[in-house]
Image 1 (cartoon, rainbow, N blue to C red):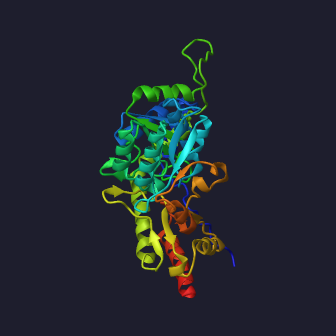
Image 2: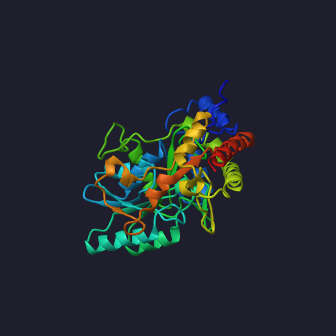
Image 3: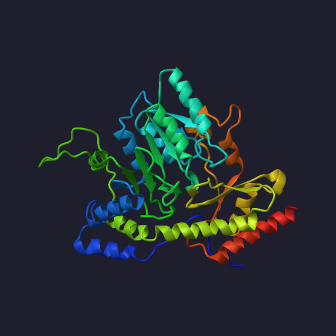
Length: 384
């Protein structure tokens, strides 16, 4: 029997207008990392998020690296980071020779724990070694508890980098995700809610800092008629072609959010009554873009664990994945300081042990989603 077409976890979804902007770039012969699409994408992204400006780059990782560089973070400095995240949130700290300190998640959002952050700051303050910055990640589209987290950081005078790589289009109390810190970060990787095939952005209300980020991302070339460089720079700029894809995608971002929320709702309606199936919460006064539908499965109640679900779907050519492996469990960060949600109780360990992400792309058909649901329900019933 021939296998059905693969269902991906989150595949690109083009709107049709991307080619228009790309063609304009070709017609004008502007295909380098500058041009109308780069300028247009930056202005449109800033306007969408109601911030003063944006600088587009070639990855979300590059955007985080630039934010750290702009905050003058280097050897001897520490940076508090969410532990439950993709490694790109933390690697740039190492690029700068600084030391990450990892903070656990909380059950209400799966994001940075307020009480763990408070403990980390209290201890750092007693030691006379406050962090130089805090990187707060919004996981799977859900905003962290930004009011409480920002209040703690502000009380110690420590700037925040909001890693909204997964939460573009989400909202926290009427304000766009990624706009709370000194810098916000977005990713346009191929699996994100909108994509440029690969890319990222730095947003801020500090226009001078954004100008400096553009300088650094173009090899820090000084304004001289010859090639002159007085500091280390990077090749981080986004091309005019790639930015054209982004402009077309941004036009349909709100549609993509609606589609993914509808996909989440269908999963929730069909599966939430299964004992042991608990979906990622949506905090009151927030709107998650539901980039990925994520849930935990308690095998003692459901009679099935997350690994069996992933294998079941994989056998049917359907991609599902565990939630991120926390950074404090990664070999690279084995000796890194870590603050759990409660002493002796790590929330992100439990989320990793039991969490799974189901196919959630905005181009997932209702027919394919119903097949996924039927497969899961049938296996649970068989186990029961």
